[in-house]
Image (cartoon, rainbow, N blue to C red; front, side, top):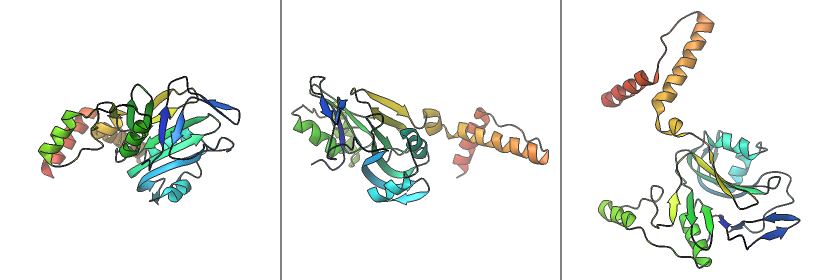
Length: 239
């Protein structure tokens, strides 16, 4: 069953023309795309958390949270501060493109399939597998995934994939599929921002120091990345 929309990029022999728009992709699980819409349209929502300062738990909450976003770039900026397990799929009729966003912490990962019959993206592994099998493409199990599951007694969805043909995209990555069926990765948060909080801490401290200097005439010592890493290490030991 397909519970969350799946972006499918078939071979170039398959092309659709709808309302004068030509596209080389399809979206399974959401009905016909709203080509005549004048703005962004939310096709799918999964998970729950905080988005744009608002708690979202269903697709109606998500529509309200992104209501003031006029472009996909606005949504990308909004997703930088998302917290929880959030996946959004949007259609932009002005670009004739589909976007797939997930929260920076990777609570709702983006899965990417690439096989002989098609290429596909989704934030729901089960829906992606169903779409691939509907196209009668092959899926081969990943022994490392099942070995890890056997040894730990838990599944590792979101970290690895149980299929060799399906990969889990890095956290902080969004996906755009344009009318020509070209999939591109968009950076929501860089690896430095995701995996190196000390650097973010040093930047925040230096901004704070600049404010103290301009407001009160104080001259606090600047904090470089190396010192921030050392402070973080000491704090983690003390905690």
